[in-house]
Image 1: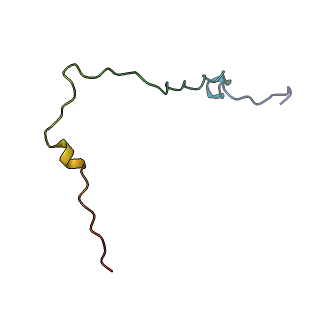
Image 2 (image 1 turned 180 degrees about the vertical axis):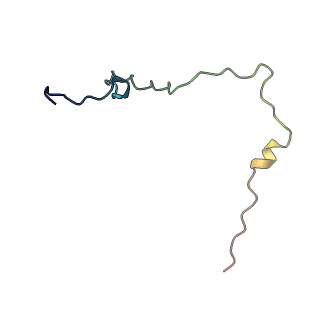
Length: 62
């Protein structure tokens, strides 16, 4: 080896130079979209109130 030879990595196996990172994703708006009430109104079954009424509480006897 008369001349100094330096070892080099082949170009196709080199680690690519880092490029600039993309910006972070943007946050979604908190408020969202305001919705209008339905055109035909809300569905109101006749027994809807019976689902939400509380039965009378039973008191403990001492």
